[in-house]
Length: 610
Ligand code: F6R
Image (cartoon, rainbow, N blue to C red):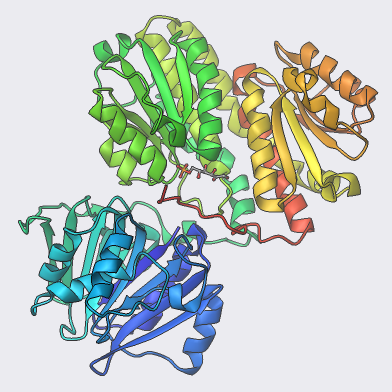
């Protein structure tokens, strides 16, 4: 969702900002714009559509300057249109602002500003900001921003320039992410580290309620009272190359193929050679963990599916009741929380607004919070008591793939760790499970080796040109069915439902016709026979069946139109393996239909507004 980049220094601001915006494209957007201080005046260029459209205009009429801000906008208030694109400016065109978030009291502020004669140009909530800052401006931009923001309710990350302060870039954050990049004689702001990593690995994660003033000579951070705030810079530990396609046609495909390596990395990070699971950053001691009575996992989308699999794992190994809540439901659900209920937010970005709010609610109600998070230093990682990083590296494709399997791996390790603390599994049990978990990356490689066969299957007419489809599974692979369905629908735009196979007879079987492909998760395990019965029922009604089964299960061919195989594995870890064919089916169908796989329509990678 909306990306912000700002620059002050000796370089060409336009090039640096465009490059930073390109790195933020993955967040999802529908228009883009840039403002520079050029020859003492604000010069702005905005366009609807992809960054390439803006870039083409700027190639013929470049903006020149050493101070600037840029923005990619994901429309909330007001359609994707040039006048709604950022930056926005005040009447005198002294101040330019880019904003990510939602200003909840913008109607009230807008009416107040309009009453003073100000005519708004856009339908956005964001445009109140430059007008409001202008009202407070008396020669000191950061002070005017500080005073203006005291009038604002809602979430924001902003970047601000003033024509009269040619070497000053101001940023502020409340509820939406903003980082500072620290260079030599040059400073940056960005929505995340990928915006600045080409220029510097030294970053500061601004906290909520903080503002920063950047000049070529240095930076200064204050809080909302104006008091200085102290920060120790962090070093980004990943290489910019990791955020590139590296020869793959899409980020999504690259990220699917990275999964074995990601899982190996995660296992190495948490398990030593003697099969001890070490989780040093949980923030709660063993006694507190052992005394927990309940766990609530909160997450959105794919991360929620990972949480659903996590419930099976934690209940199996640690024998503690687990509820899994959608963060958007949890936040308004008045849930029962206490000091003995552990809340686990699961999130790739660590910035999802609903999940972040769930963390706040949990903490306010005295519940301990341990985040399962990918992005180091993200808001959720920093606001939880403890964190289990998933070590997936930057995930750029909007459809989550490697982040999902790394979340499954983290949940598997956490459940075994909790099992030991609670004495519900023996060290021998843990060793057996870890042996099986360590085999998963190699087995995942075997699944990925079948990519060509999976592509050929996915491209068959009855799958690729289906109007509707259904994914079904049972037990630990019921969430896998939902995840497979989400993957396909979000990148192919085919209407797909993920269902518990045992629910078919309770309604959905009415949909089965020879036009309805049903993707069935049928690996060997405790519910295999049950799934087979469901398949027979679908077959009897003429449904087209694509089964994902365990190698050696030749018999399933008799009731399936197509079968894709995964290697035999422990049932509890099978969601990690079935993920690969599910992701590849979605990927190849979407490619075959000519969809924008990495940036599907209407979607944003990091959902930083409610
Ligand atoms: C789907 C997908 C989304 C995210 C969801 C939560 O492929 O990626 O459903 O899983 O928006 O995002 P995070 O994990 O960043 O909290």
